[in-house]
Length: 245
Image (cartoon, rainbow, N blue to C red; front, side, top):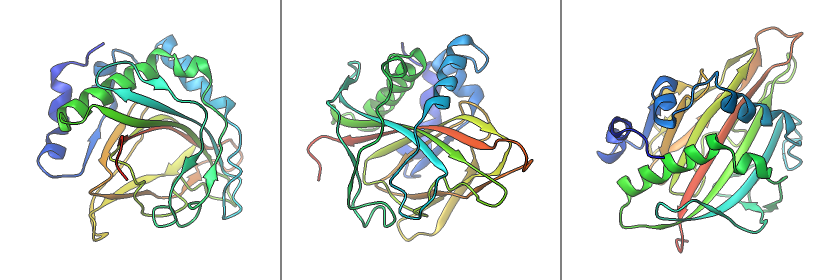
């Protein structure tokens, strides 16, 4: 499935040197040929209700749940899942939780095969071919995140603060926001000077970030109604050229 040609226009800032693009949900729905109220989207979003707790939080936080899987990507071919492996970031990339191998619960097979995730993969691969036509082999990682918020305990989408992930490109797609406020994304240049901000507020709002050229971070979330569940669900997909250090 190929996205419509106008999808590439929103990456023009990245082509011309701006290291990020914010992509609103109405465009993403058209490109992915999925609507937020379709049954396919509903079943995809419901899979976030089955995420185990992240047990690697060095700040002692109990506010993050996640699943993870790694894939080999070659050109436009469907991603091939790699054997189970840890997620690793160096301490200079993630001063809070980096420097160790983190083994997260795996992405479920039905999530991997889901048409929404496959459509996101296809869109990302099309953008990779557009931005880096000389590179065909990529290491890809997909993460499901749920960040919980309580009145006395904010949820931290990026507890490590303003950071880079140590990859080439990052795609973030909002899946659901329930009873939360804030959660604003800030993008900064390599001198850590802010160059843009936005809030992923609607299902399928997306951000595409050139991780080689930008720092990024998200402000903590707080509940709007303290007596009701509050959380922020996102899909994060990263790509790093195979063979790069």
